Length: 178
Image 1 (tube, rainbow, N blue to C red):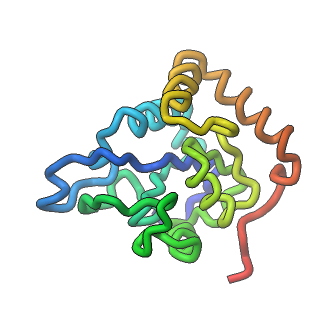
Image 2: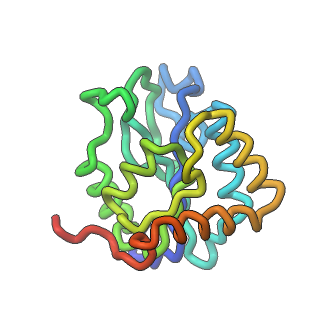
């Protein structure tokens, strides 16, 4: 994507449900994840993202790491961060992807995903804010996603809450120790 400056980086989790076509041939990451939770989380980001201002959206895949919506991927099953699967993307993999995609130094990182994904993102971006801070079940995540989508100001409120309760994450820069 070149050397464009990223104003805000939004990271959304992948989805367990995938397009069956991805079992046969590569499908763009933005189309492969078909589950309702992934779609709801993406819809929230797509309602507030401003690409012209330098905002960027990436999917964090348990298997592939960071993906642009256009990156071609194959389907996979059972590879999950929370299961500590040996083929899941490691912290180093995700950091390498961030460098390649030019987002490793993003000043503002907003993770719209569950705890496992937030943890992985904070290993790369310690200052990452979570729009799902304190929400652990898919049902509650769906409810929060709906609330943020129908009232976009709620996203800012949830991010402010996360910053206020995790003040050490406010003004850090990305990891540079590699």
